[in-house]
Image (cartoon, rainbow, N blue to C red; front, side):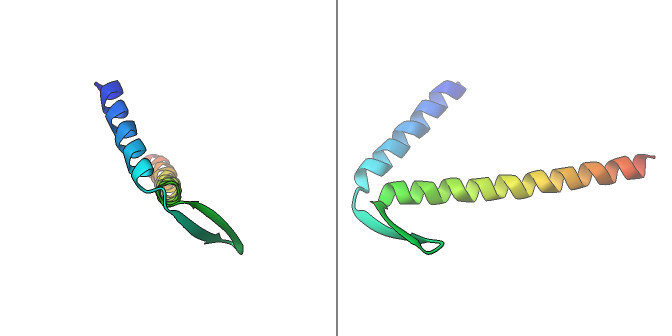
Length: 72
């Protein structure tokens, strides 16, 4: 079931990218690049997911340390 869901999500992402091929100029840390709009939005979404995962992992580690201290 997970494989089918993954295939559907990938197909939807591919359709989204192919429908948004207009070039967009992206400025990041003083650099500028031209990318298709769909690709630029995909990179932004991936970057946001990475930030959320890092913050979540840091919070989980913090809670585990706190639980070990209170268990002693």
